[in-house]
Image (cartoon, rainbow, N blue to C red; front, side, top):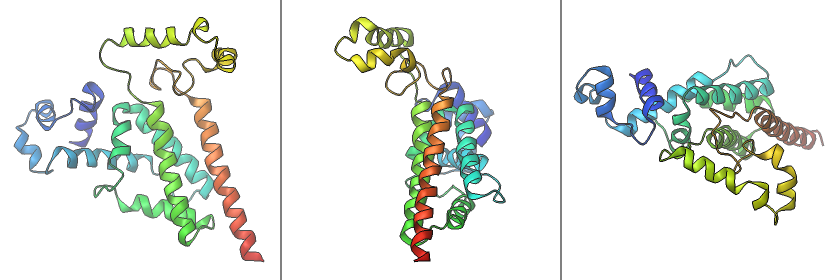
Length: 221
């Protein structure tokens, strides 16, 4: 059922997702689905749990490699199912379907890095926010209504003739156009931001390493 729900999201998007449409895809009555889940939101929570479970790395990795694999695995999962990108962020306030093994694994690795107490909580929240944030932006949806008109309007707005008052942007436009947030007319499904994502992960892990080193230095004093 979860696999079919992902297929439904892939084909029709989040806005059109419904229990009725999923039941039609499966060839069953909606009541058959409600036997397993109480509501549309409960089913979408199960979808989020599946995506995060698929992204969870092996715990035998060092904490840095674990985080790098987690970021990469999550991005790969969303790349396969881009319509789920906003769904994950919306359902992480509290999700009873997400396996606590996912949380346990991340806390364990951050503990191995040296984080404890309030700093462990802060590091955990940092990783979750970073995990979701970039990828949600990268795979944000293009408007459904008249996509080509919308894309053409964005390209016109970024034409050099329109940027006379923005010299830095104009000078760097060949590097930025359709490769930088706010300045794109395609989502990551068509124009992935691979290099930026790699740098993003480097910065997140490097920042955590620096904080962990500071904590270790304080303990040695």
